[in-house]
Length: 248
Image 1 (spheres, rainbow, N blue to C red):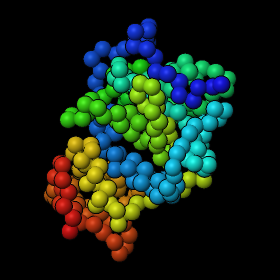
Image 2 (image 1 turned 45 degrees about the vertical axis):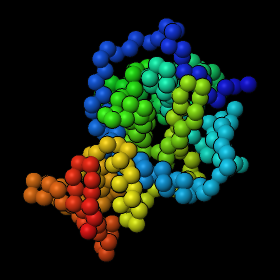
Image 3 (image 1 turned 90 degrees about the horizontal axis):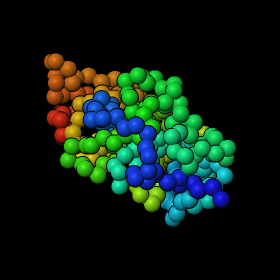
Image 4 (image 1 turned 90 degrees about the vertical axis):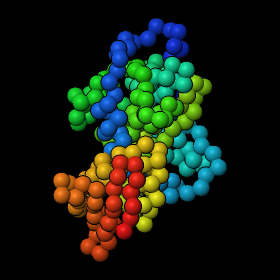
C-alpha cells in the first residue's frame, strides 16, 4: 500500500548538497508580508468546511478526507524536527512512483515556473535548513506561506508524520475563494502579528494588493496611519506600529 506520508530522509543518510550559511531574509520578508492573506484564506476555508471529527489522506489519489468530505490537495514538502530541514515533495523519494505522479505538480511548478522564481533559491533547492523566525525557534510556517503567495491556492493544510509535518496546498474546485472580511480583520491581524512577530505595515499593504482594496497612508506623509477601504461604505482607520495596530 502506498504510504501517504513519505518519510523525511534520515539525517544520517547521504543528502542532496546543502546550501552553506543559507540566507532566508527575502523568503521571510515575503512570507511574513503575506501572513495575513494566508490566515484569511485559512479562516475562510475552515468556516466553509465546518466542524469535523477526523481527517485522513487517500492512498490512491491526492485527496484529504475531512470526515467523509473529500478535498483535493497537492503535496508541497515536509519538515523534519530532527534535522530542522525542509524537503520539497518533488525531491522526496516517497513520491517517486507512478501512483504519485500528480501529487507534487504544485511543488514542481514552484520549482520550474513560479513567477519571481529567481528571487528564491529555496524553490530549486531540494533540502535546506528551515528559516528561523526571530523569537520562534520552532516555527515551520515561512516556506509554506511563500508557496501560498506564489501558487495562490484556496488554502493550506498540514499533517503530522513520524519526525515532523507534511505541508499541502488545497486546490479543490468546490472550495470557494476567500474574500476580504472587514468584520474579522482586526482580530485576524492581531493574531497574525502575534504569530509572525511584527511587520504590520507590510501585511496591510500585501493584503490590500491581494484583494485590490484601496489603501491610503503608510507613506512618507502618514507612515503610521492607514485607511483600508473594503467598499464604498466601509473603511477601517488604522494606527500602525511594527508589532501593533489600533483601530478607529
